[in-house]
Image (cartoon, rainbow, N blue to C red; front, side):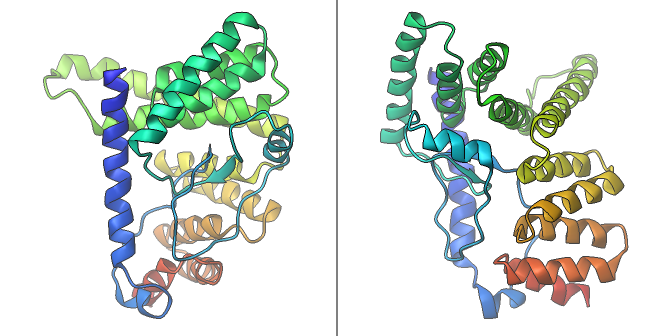
Length: 283
């Protein structure tokens, strides 16, 4: 548990740093004068918590998430968010206590798929990636009514785990040790993509899954297919600010400036005001 808490602290520190930077930046009228990094908006994930922002963007919706919230079986209202907030110590303790409670419930009802989904969400919030993945896999195996979300959450946690390993390498690694890890990265990436593919097979209208898949394709430098995926997300959800922003950046990266600036302008209208700085620099 101490390793998990240490990982939570690392995650929270990075979130706090980005929050401070965000609050120090001007918005709307002044944002075009603040040089911002041309970095894709991050993947959407399922969470009870969202970072507070001075700027409100249109929320993302999904029918399965709405169905799950309507079941009144969760600890609160789940949202699709891509701006995560750090958890204070009391919330971390709360989620560990909830994990213990759900473990007792699972011991009494080991075939209840939704209990595994609930516990997996709690594990993911305290950055216990291994147990979260195991629980989402169990929910899938037991054919949860929310199978789509189990695949979606497993893909997201797998990518978080991959990012964590990539950003916190073992400094004592030898060259011989790195080669197998490169193969492991490729395998893990393939598993993430398979999960998103399954989500979209089950629910082709899940715009956030199209968006996340597009982000993964950008990481792989498959920009053509990424553009197709961002476009699909926008077709489903035409006020998807983050999809316009990322598609705009991708267009700019491949030299299609006119399309890129049009998308960034739309992203700015929808609340991503750093797009205006990028537009100013693109002229």
